[in-house]
Image (tube, rainbow, N blue to C red; front, side, top):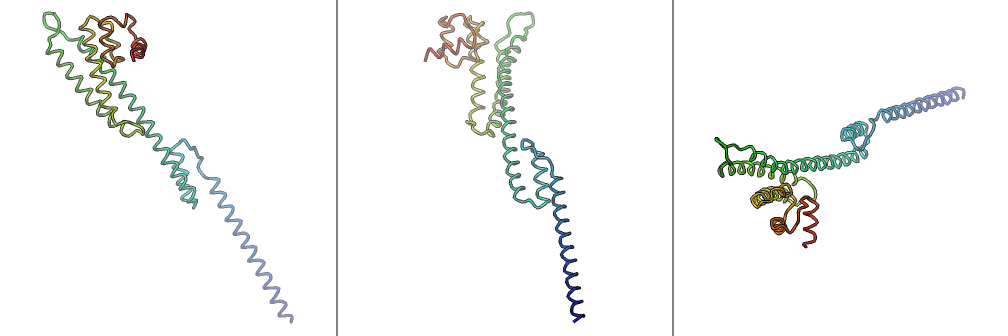
Length: 220
């Protein structure tokens, strides 16, 4: 009986040790997990780099659901940033297209003729051709950039080039019709009827964009 009691006591001791060791292991696991969580990178939802680092950390530490959600958020943020960058780039190109016309005017004004006198028609035509080609190339870039923007019509490039040519033509017509003071307003005129009323004096002498827009409104 004594041997049996000793055996039971020994078994109890071993079980107690096993439970203690097991408990220590659980505590160790809990501590390690919390250390890993504490070491997680800070998360900034507006930063692609921050989202990527947090996603990589989640994958390394077995948080697959979190990693999947972070991957979705990262993809959405990348797309939003790409759209924003494309819109900024498109705006810059559209501004450059408008500036081309002013550069054309400057180029025409700088034409010289040996011995003096106005530039020849050939000189003027060469300047106009070169700038039209530049505008055509730029319109292609505008179309390509706009194509990657949600909500674009696909006509942005063609419309930009059409506006450039219309502005060029209207400036020439206004200058040749004795209305050179209106030439800077040509880019705001998109209706030949408005152009005609400027030439005939119906629009008056207040040559500014607001006057052109207001006049067009009352014509409709």
